[in-house]
Length: 287
Ligand SMILES: [Zn+2]
Image 1 (cartoon, protein in one colour):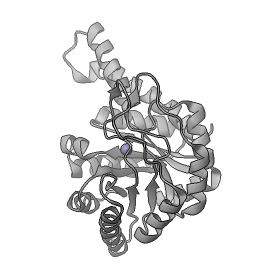
Image 2: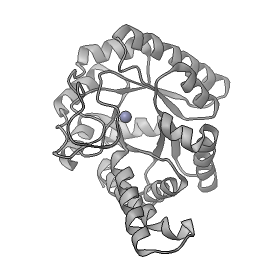
Image 3: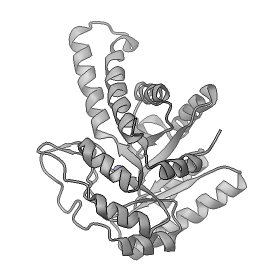
């Protein structure tokens, strides 16, 4: 079986993107795996700091690895938005395939220094243990809440990443995966999310060797997502839309089901998450 690096290379060559979906529980994990399996596409499971605290770091890694091993399936786990080096190291040590060190709120130099430290550690461990550990970093603040928003958070998406700064940052840090600010923001804005600047994505893709990831894939139109992927995005993060699907499904389920058995009322939220993920993967893979 191939590693995440191989699948990213393939995605880049074919102008498609791998979906990255966050989980807080096993219901969503099964739903995401089943949607990916039904479309025969690799998939990345994300756990942010808050989600990891809830699920458990080693437990999240073990759950994903157990599916990977039992079904011989390309499902990977990423430590999403991690704000300190120790937090990242803990996930690398637990066996994560990739980690995101988020210094997007720091100065350029501080972000470079922190990212470099993580890259050195990750690549050292990868070599020691003969496995792949990819590192992702982000430049430019795009908001921080995967929620339904009344308006765009203050300052989010304002300092778009230029191709020059992307080149400088990725060369200095040697980071594997890079998250630029190209009009995307975290969360779903009720009045509509901003547009993705696909031509800027294309310029950044030409200027940098790192794989490009688009955060805030919820609330963006299918046309904008496809344009961004065509221009060079290799991973798209989706969280808010599946959180909403889970909650809507749970409310619907509790309303019509009196059972106290979780596996009887959790089937609707699981199915709702499956539906969202299925449609996103289909779009990302150009199917
Ligand atoms: Zn994100």
